[in-house]
Length: 174
Ligand code: SF4
Image 1 (cartoon, rainbow, N blue to C red):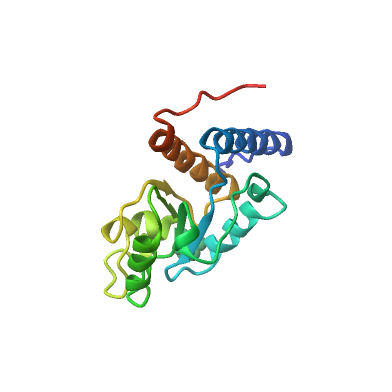
Image 2 (image 1 turned 90 degrees about the horizontal axis):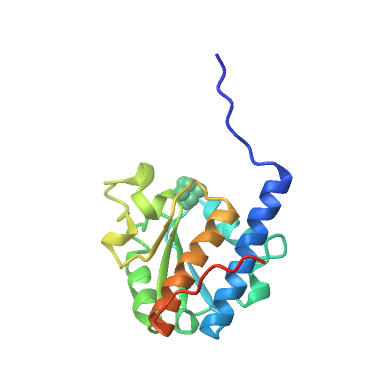
């Protein structure tokens, strides 16, 4: 007997993307800032990293709302962390966290930083990420789809809105 995995249709994917885009735009307006993002690769296989690029560049285009990659954690509001935190990257991850100004959000992207995946308890890695630095949002998947990464950014922006404005704006259906 075969098992059918439900696959989202083109229209369904489109409406999901539009919902996320509207919510990100609404949250950016609400917190009155463009949330800049610093990406830390802590030893990822590059699978998650490619999906982050897809989420931010023209196909999904979160950059339209100001969610853009920056070259230094000192300029960032959100840290996107991929990979299982290898021993080589451990101090770099901690340093980037310390250098990011408050209020900051940490989003663990992918199965490696969220739970350790196949690297769990390896002597060469330190995953899950929350053993190393505080994590605000967990995005599972190996790798997660761009929609899931955008949803993670939405959750991070909602937490940021709560800190900056004391509340999370209602979802507006247009
Ligand atoms: S979660 Fe999967 S795709 Fe992402 S870095 Fe780990 S192994 Fe690679």
